[in-house]
Structure formats: structure tokens, C-alpha cells
Length: 313
Image 1 (cartoon, one colour):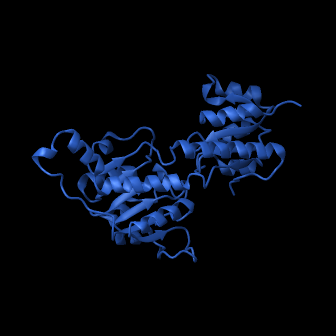
Image 2 (image 1 turned 90 degrees about the horizontal axis):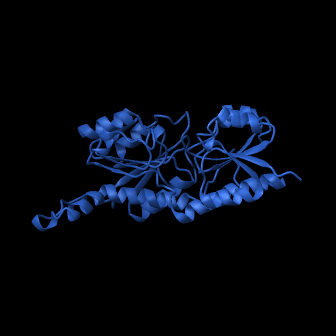
Image 3 (image 1 turned 30 degrees about the vertical axis):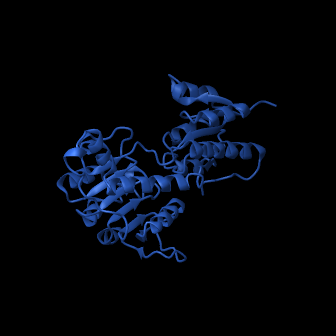
């Protein structure tokens, strides 16, 4: 029996790629000098695509591969996959949810603690030899503050549980109220922003959430508020955020994601009231191994004719 053939859109974790190569013939899209020619040469053979939340899979690729059956994506976010096009072509899509919930929640707390207690600045203060001349300035703390979570999904709930341990008051905004959750719900995001000290963004990236953290929302969060973005850069009006951070109309920000990754505006990098991280939310050995294993499990389940491990609805 001939081996199945798979298009890998971008590089995946080495362990996952090695496992995939055990089962199928792999074509590396990102390495092709002439990508349309590659697609044309494999159009009648490729039935599988492996990709990531960063590289995704476009409608053009799907249309060039008429026998495509499954797109297995590495990452919980699948906004870079044209799911509507996949649905039109009868192509199933999977992602890697749940296995990264704890890691992203942990990283969220790390960024919040770093921003609140000014840990990067304190580290630099010691390294620069300034401590003998004066104590580092006092900082706020998380205890007793109110945090609003935009997107109380799987990861949002894990973040909420950890913030409660820090004795923070948790409220949330989403598409609808979740009746069995104990946290107060806000139907209006700007109203929630006015009432909180911290705004944590952990909603999925999509057309409906693009720019949802608008200038008005950040102005409502105000000069004493801090924005934390662990979702996608597309959810935040980045130019407005930079302007408000620069003027002091927004107190601070802790950011793991950006509008045009990996490029980060120089104006944002220069600001003293932000903590920046290079999209490290799920970047641990343990979590990335689990994500890769989920991609492989979905591919193997499909090839066996078994139920998919984590299909995208």
C-alpha cells in the first residue's frame, strides 16, 4: 500500500516532525523556491497538511490540493487557517487545545508579577550597581486588585483560578454569560475596563475579535490600569496602545503577542512601563512536546479512520 503524502507548511517541533515522517511522505512547503510548482507537482497525492498557528493554511493551498482531507495545526489558535474555506472543501481541521492551558496561565501570572513588581527594572537596577546608592522604588501589588478577563475559555478559567490564589477579584467579558461560573459578568468590555485594575486578553483571534481592545477600552482602563495580552496581537489596537502608554493615559502593559510578530515597534520597545515577551506563552519543553504529540495523534487517528482527538468545531 502506498504511503500517504503530507504537506508541512512551516517547520514544526523536531520530535513531532520525526514522528510524522515515520507515517507519511513529507513535502516541506516553506523550503520550496517555487511554491506554486511544488503544489502543482503533488496536487493529486497530498491528503494531509501539518501546520502551526503561525503559518496556518490558506484557501489557495486548499484549492491547489483537491484531495486534501485534514489540516492538523500545532497550537490552540487556528485563526491563520481559513476554516471557512476548509468547510467549503470538506476538509477537517484539528488544533492542540488543553495541553497548553496550564503553561499559558502560568506565563500570564509571570508577566503580571513582572509588570506589577517591575522585576525587569529591578534586575537591571541591581546589575547596574545602583542599589548601594538608594533602594529601588516601591511598587504596587496584585493582592486585593480587580482583574477583568476577556475570554473566559479553557485558558481563561485556569488564569482565573490562579489569580484567586493571589486574592484578586475576578470578573469577565465574553460573547455570553457562563451561568455556572462564579465570577461577575460584563456584557460591555469598556464598562468592565473602567472597573478593573488589570485587563487580561485571552480570547481567540478572529475577524470578530480584531481590534476588540480599542482606544476607548484602553482609555477606560486608564492611567492606573495595566493591559496583559496573551492572545493575539490583532485583538489590540497597537498604535493606540503605544500612544496611550506614551502619554500615561494607559498605566502599563505586559505583552506576549504583537500585531506584526516578530517585528515589535521601536516605540513600544523603548517604553519603560511595559514588559515584553517573544510569544512564549506555551514555550516549554513539556508543553510543546504535548502539542506535537496531539498533532501526530490527530493525523494517525484520521489515517486509521478513528475519531479525531481534537477537531475544530
